[in-house]
Amino acid sequence: MNQESIIQDVQEPITSAPPEIRQIVERVLQAEKDKLYMKNPRYINDDILRIIKEVIK
Image 1 (cartoon, rainbow, N blue to C red):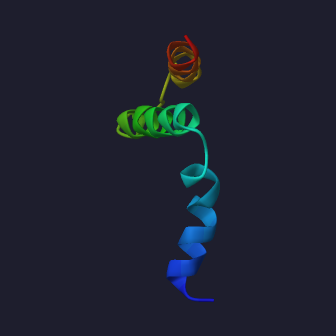
Image 2 (spheres, helix red, strand yellow):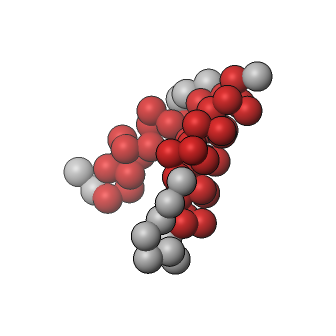
């Protein structure tokens, strides 16, 4: 198995998900990236909950 096919296997659930789920995943990943610089990231759970509520509405 080459690296490209492994990456496709890992990303397949995201790429085949409905648009709302993809939007949640993308926004959560961005929120996590935004917190990486912090020594003690805080409130990520609140951010994730807010993202989910916004997408569901």
